[in-house]
View 1 (cartoon, rainbow, N blue to C red):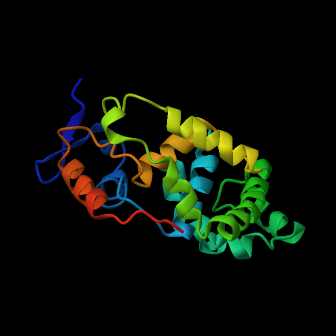
View 2: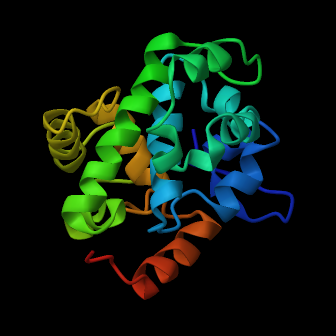
Length: 203
């Protein structure tokens, strides 16, 4: 089976983006482009943890509801959530109502604050785990890597929850720490150009 499909413009794209109509725009405009905004990075870590055991289509369909429920993933606001907020979220049909994952987001918000205090930004910490692109295997053939395992382990040491190596690897793919578009995908070169121009955060 080919790694690609033809999009509506008759150009090749990663096969997975044809699995649902809403995947095409996400694939073309978001997936793999480098990100250093702390709230977007935190959001993606949270949404990947919510996806565990579910499909990304489920999470993507609920993303705007998640953003509303969690104040656009502003971790300074989330860190102040109380039991009242947990009850509110557990009653919110627009999101995935999983107590453990909701509580993990609140816990991780406080841990994100600590990292910002120590490192200057969440981005500065996370981008230190960017893999050496020359040592990566064929795109979309792995679900973990040495770097995702290392980042997962270090986040857990810092008290983060629901950040296993597979979750972290999916985060790295989506946030541009890896260009995992397949070789014949029309977006791969665009992402690579964006990564080359991207200024890695130092603080």
